[in-house]
Length: 310
Image (cartoon, rainbow, N blue to C red; front, top):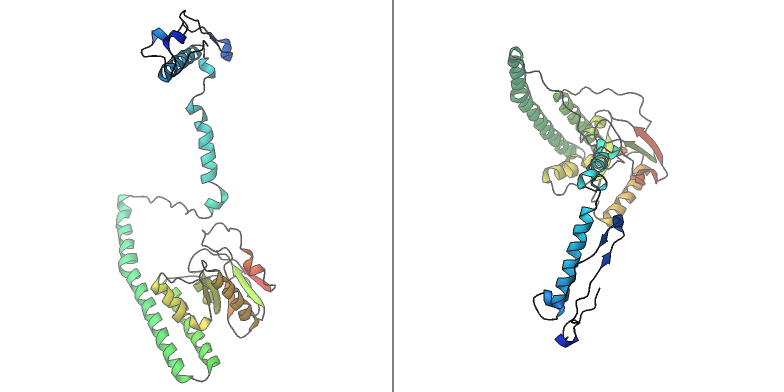
């Protein structure tokens, strides 16, 4: 390219005869011979702006020449990678971990006219009769259980062992009543391990009702997150389940987690306390898969009794 003076150059310093500039490109064997440029062919004096205009003109001509010699079959288009992007996103969406939380697809109902009467009748029975009745039975059971707790405290003020035993009995009756009102049919397979010291029961976690299913069979103490942001749930944890000696902690607090581990070790050493139940998954998944268990329950050096819930 012919040298041009930039800002501060005088007109006498510029070459008076036109110089031909050429750009040779090796891309697709394209050779571009640019038309001659002189300082007089642009508006303005010999400044930096003049040089920029020349460069832009050269670049534009260069790109136009490349565009003409381009092979349409070898040209890259954004749509060429859409299939690969789609495949990658499909792998992310349908990975094994996401399937653990996917709800099962519901079968579409056959909306025949002659079946609509029975469907409407079933809807009325379920949501107008059974649902309020079940809620009422649950509330009455909880109130009667709290009343029994008050009676046991009055009858056994100086005998904590008897007090705890009768409170556990009342709590188990309450759980059995609630599950019966919901129409629960529970099938237990196998024999539960005999209760002894230095023992932990671990189970997969499918719903919030897992604890009730096991409480129907025998008293279990659980380890879990204290729901301080939900007053009603926190009341159930701290008052209704107090006799179970459950271990509640806040996962966000490191001190709480260390204290919970200490309480777990103390709990499993006492044979008189209820069986300790831990859900190592740390979250609820669907009824088809299990995710990797956290190693906290398995690092205590105690006997592990597995429980499978489906």
